[in-house]
Amino acid sequence: MKKLIAIDLDGTLLSSNIDISSENIQAIQAAQDAGHIVMICSGRAPEDIKTVIEKTPLQCPVAGSNGTMVIADGKLLSQISIEKETVKSVATILNQKEYPFKIYSSRGIFVASTWSERMLSFLEKNKDVMNHLTEKEYKLMTEQPKETDSIKLFDDLEDILKIEDIAIQKFFIPTISGKEDLIATLKEIDGISITTSGPFNIEIMDTNGHKGNGIRVMAEYFNIPIEDTVAIGDNFNDIPMLEAAGLSVAMGNGDPAIKEMADVVTLTNNEHGVAHAIDKYVLNN
Image (cartoon, rainbow, N blue to C red; front, side, top):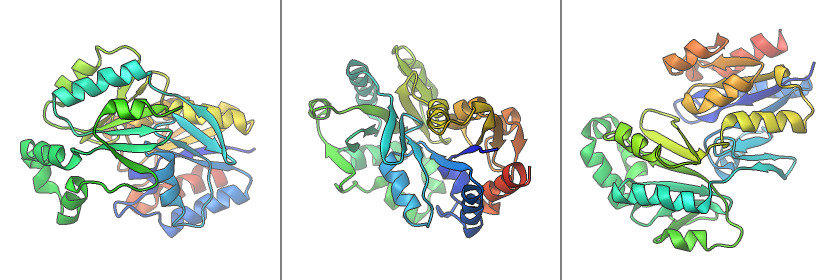
């Protein structure tokens, strides 16, 4: 029986060294060779997912930006965007509170030209975080991003919204101090959902934009009943796809709440937990 296996990236398929182990690659290839469909369902933008996967021999359909952009066979199957007026409302709050943020869109990732300045200020207010960062991590977080094909800098939000046919899928905001206060303020805005992919961030999408949408759209495209799907994840933004899937698998390194709600728990991301799950629950089921 053909299955659809939806796999998160960070904290799941990727080890703590941000790479995909040969064990995980071989298990995914074995599943594909057996006729199953393996998709990547990540909070990362589709372009970012592609960059990660291109370092391996893998080829997989993707649901990027928390399932708001679903792509298979070179086709955009689904795109769920935040209304432009809602985008303005969210950005106004983030600017008032001086949070650094990134905007994920159909035209790439937009990063404020004040990113470095705001991030340094953010870390100054969150010294506990700064003390846990390696020198490399600190540099990556505070360095002003350079423009590439997929990353663009901006000064004024209106300049983004004026781009023809642009669709905004997600806000990504690093946050710790004042996190609950920020979430409470944002919840007053209609039409958005708020989640997190780790202890140091929040992510904002349209109410219908989540990984559950990603796995459902992909299952329908490949004509696979939703009960024949498997989802593997580790954090709160994975909950919608774990709830939607026929079998939900939490990583051993996952948040305790995720492990509690999942059907089964596999090994950690540094112990090739994805490979273990595929072998046990798909190939040898």
